[in-house]
Image 1 (cartoon, rainbow, N blue to C red):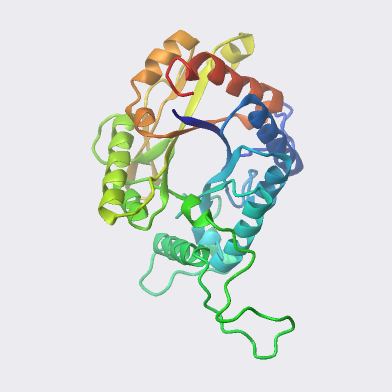
Image 2: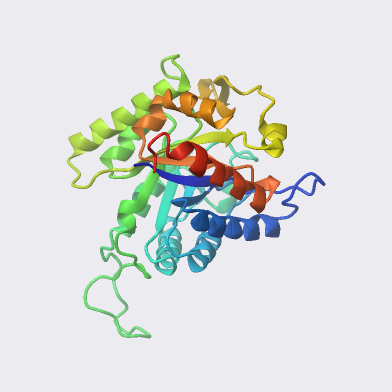
Length: 340
């Protein structure tokens, strides 16, 4: 059985062709889409975080609002750029949002990808330490965040506090039990996936990764997942980890689907450069009639390896159409592939 969720970047644009004209539209429609996804029986509502862009940015108000409007669906991110984050403040925000949602948060974090501005994290007040790269800083912030989610007291109480304290060192509040096990790392390489496994984080692998072997994207991603699970086993963690992959998948059911996605042009992997000289491989888009789509997806080794599939959605086409996209996958593709 495979969990299926959606992943939205929350794009907005004042273009007449966009159903999402403003930041308010993007936020409110994200909440509505999560409600629709839960009604349809989807397992997860996930959101991307990008700074300095016309997309979703600060995630915790949105996650809390979705948590208050829904009851069962998992709510998450894919991913929060840890170069921009204060781990202490983030632990408080995450604890509060998770409590509002009744323990349904699944937080994807990462060192981040190239952003809209140069070294945008500097504007948030962060600088790499001497001899440290921005990626190192992001991983350092992540490690501190994980430590804080453990709930162990670390702060010496004031001998004359305004309010009575429990005995011993104090932890951050509100604290949400179990959230530490629901943190995921977005890995673009095999090395960072094994690093995440050692720290006891679940794995998120998106529609791109660094090209490490020249093989097709899904083959490289499947190898990354296997490396993660081997490192997890070696680390001796007691629980079973989770692994998600993201895909752009569209079942061509009606004229709208064919007009938007039936023209071809993205059936193959592509290559590019997103972080200096490292070549990246980008996974293909799947768009076909359901019977063809099922056969294509059966050949995707990484989907077979993962326990969770996140469908990237074209949010600017509106809530109603995106609900149609999700329902089409659930009703025509998921069952024949044994996902539900």
